[in-house]
Length: 132
Image (cartoon, rainbow, N blue to C red; front, top):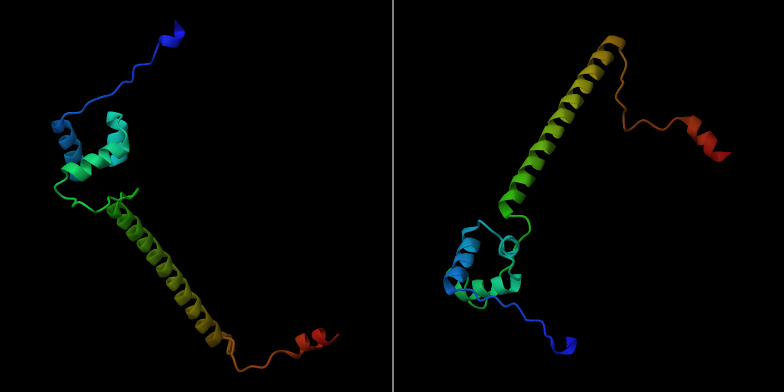
């Protein structure tokens, strides 16, 4: 008896109105294909087929590529990173200006040249260590 039993395949039929509504939701930007897939329990290839068939925006022969992160969100992220880096650069510049002023004051008070002069020869102490 078990051999004669067959599992009945559950196939759903979707109306053209439903298909067009799915495409409309996708084109409006409310939902991605993955969102629609999870929301309606429909295979994503089926949704892509409907988009290719019923879309008013996408022309035939063009492939739809969805980005995981929208370009606008990515742009905001990059802008915030630039702002953060500009703030760090500003803080470093303030520190450099402060240290240069401190060096100037120390040079005036001690009558010494504190800044390293690039034309100064290296000290003789390091040469002796290398020869041994």
